Length: 335
Image (tube, rainbow, N blue to C red):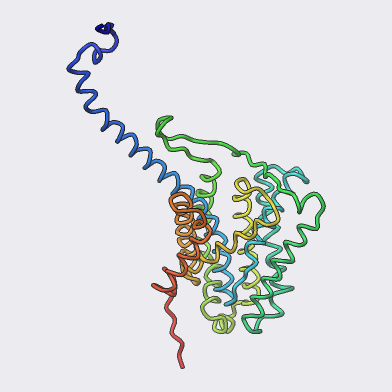
């Protein structure tokens, strides 16, 4: 029995057997092109997610580099400073009722003052001691900060949501099936990091304070003899590092929420500073981006477990190939 083929006036390909045969011939190529486009969009999506995460790593790594350049010490409390900044922003919005932008500025200012006081009361009395003592002190500061937060009832032991105005906003580029989906929270991280980098560049390039900080970081004794207040600048550097950490905490809070253990992300930012070069501010951002992108891609394409170790594998490779980092200065010890 021969099947009945009904004519479709709106579909000329179906009515024409020759054109229908040609359409079937190109169908595999169309499916292949669609599949390739989907893979490319997925790859770009992962790279954007890695860039956003890398910006957080880079901002925390900026604190490592700033403090190291100013005092030649490594502060392992940067992650906890980020956590305190996130809790400070949360308190300003929920307890004090501040609007979002006022709460952000208040949290950044409060953390800057906290950083200056921390350097003046805790760090400065121990300067001149072996580097191991200062490192252990900063680790202790991190544990104390985390413990004090957890002691606050109904706040420190809970996970909180930071009420940001761009929460759960999405933007789509392209079609609904193969378009690129952009998260407003990730875009906010990338754009804020870019603006902050420009502000820091202008500070260290064109302002007297920034030039004095650079002079003090290169040679504190020479800067002191030139009349630069080295001790005050060290306090300002700690305040600046704490303020940058607060920005990172407020940007990260809508994604990972606000909790006492969010400071552990600082252990991922330390490899970023090593990869970029411990004495380079641009290197901190570049190192953070590299760690973030590698972590994002390895978490999707490689087996489970590689995402958590990808940052340290990159550090090991960098130390073997270029021990001073991508932008680190090559120093030679004179005997």
